[in-house]
Image (cartoon, rainbow, N blue to C red; front, side, top):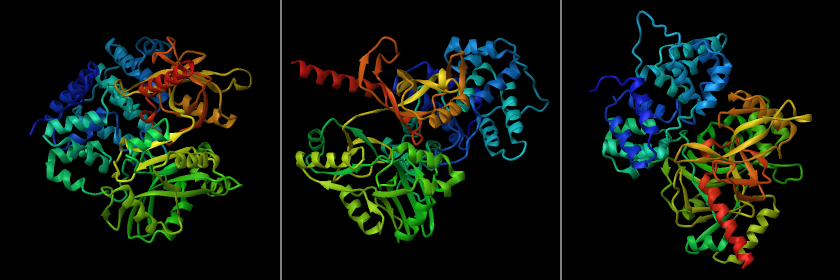
Length: 566
């Protein structure tokens, strides 16, 4: 058994990881480090490496915004906000800026008489204490813990403590690389590691089981979905046309309506029902009417269902996604919201039934089982065909009915948790982009009190960072401008007067007329006539569309133009 691993050790490893972008090297560095970690440290170590305290399904959070963090650094360092802002501007990262400040020796480096060793377990427990602090006086208690953590930090520790608190490590490590590292460290097949992570939804717990229970323990954990532990949902890739889809699926596919709603995963045991979002958050309180419907309609002893909830207008037509998000944001007024924004549940998959695992069955088999289980809950309308013309007609029907398009599902495919693959393919007439707001300008005239001109960025998974592709002030209502402004103000990293740099947190769906080559943005591309059509509160920043997708869309768009010219 090795001695306890210090937070300084973890920070040094993160620093080493940040200096390489080679996937194999990242996995190897992590694997060697994980071999040195104790059983009771392995889970917090893995979570902190990717900047997490909890798994997505845990409703608790640190509730420490950029503003509180900056306030703490200013207090213990004695520098001014302007000096701190200058450092952030210099490095382009609040973690690096904090390390720079600490290295100048102006920190109030106070030490207690009986100083507790700064192990990974200690840091993790202090962050947990912050989360668990509630009620009167909790804000001051949180700030005091935060202050003590930084007072005793070395510059490199402060850098990564800041990044962990903001959940933005920027070291190029994501769960796929961690899966490879765990596989290497404990000599366990990578596919088993991936399967266990998909089932458990907690990469830290996967590492703990791999270390303490080995292959047999992981196999047992990965055998079947666990009720009330949300599973990462199967995701779809994009396709240009129906002919391409049919070829990919060997002309053995089912086309389902692609609804413009919120993806939901429903877990039920007896009368107990919990509903999780696509990013695994517990949203049960936002959908009490759906909970009641599932209780009354689904007679199974235990079941996990996959579906979509859409908002319904007075004409029984689907409402745009943004109306549904309004309901989710106002849980404290849920009874009023139920009347204002009624919803309808559609089911399209089933993963568990009466404690029996179904994810390894084919789509066709799961769909047949779902028909018997759904009761009076509607299934997403589906068409099975190998003819392009019939599928095109169904696509037109979907769009004319107010939906987004189609999802094509390979008939013999298993339910591949948490992955994008060609077993599920999206077909839409207009392919918008999900992008992240990374900065904003204050408006003028009627919009002078709002941050209303937004800098938009695509996700770069290789760098675990965001790269700008455009800017827009179009698309939002006054109420949405107010909501977004409030959220952005809580996450300002740097204030440059007219412009503020913010923590990349808000995902928006963006429509545009064209993608152009551009030297003005780091991505090398710019969106022409961009406008926001939805605030995607159901998506986390790393689920935003990637720079490679922007590049692919540009190339396909260029190919189409070339064909027209020729």
